[in-house]
Length: 173
Image 1: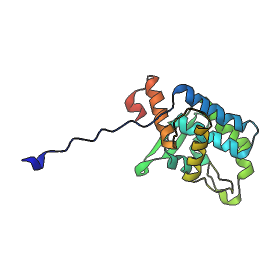
Image 2: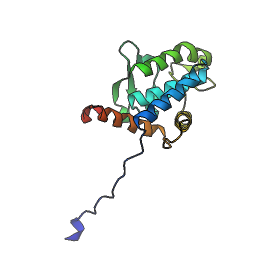
Image 3: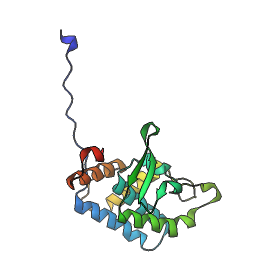
Image 4: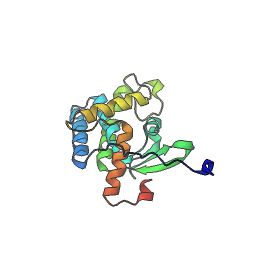
């Protein structure tokens, strides 16, 4: 009879997330570097703002093309796990960061081989996930007292802040 018994699940801990004030400081730190209109700093600000505003995965962000951005409706079209396409809204701060990147940053990095990629690396190619992870680590570590977060931590932070703000759990999922 014991073969049909299931072992109890191991207790899963919740991932570390930024507090509201810490998230604001991280976004402010990313914005501070972008004030000089340095293309890389503008891109990095856009990365951090978009990840926090939308809660999308790193792979989804790296795959976004310019055509996937609807600036008027402030939405991104992303291709998620299982090739499921979804439309994700973003707020005004992310819209500002994205607009600054597209106007003042991307034109300096674009090459004929860049294609329609929204976010570009230093050499003009589509940014890869490792670069995005480095950008997030740098942005978060610029604020003293914050937990060391990977981009997935920003995803959890976005979801936590949405839920704390009264969003419906099913909508956030």
